[in-house]
Image 1 (tube, rainbow, N blue to C red):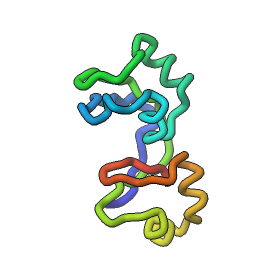
Image 2 (spheres, one colour):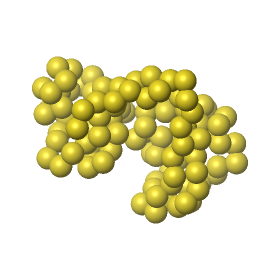
Image 3 (tube, helix red, strand yellow):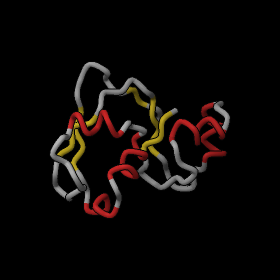
Length: 104
């Protein structure tokens, strides 16, 4: 899958999935590389994640990649010519899972 660019001029929303309910808001935001203060400003009443609820997500102009089966930081590092350590730093996680959006 190719990288995409969020439209920086439009707000975007995320519908919470059942599997997201197991995460703390901080862990959830790590998946998207968003700051907790900015998230709280956009969603002041959100205290915990509940499936079906709609979140207002911070605007972004970062490129992202959706992780596919068998992809690793190492393979993505080679694909995008970015050091593996930089990818981990940008995304604030050492673990990848299928369907995860990671920033490039």
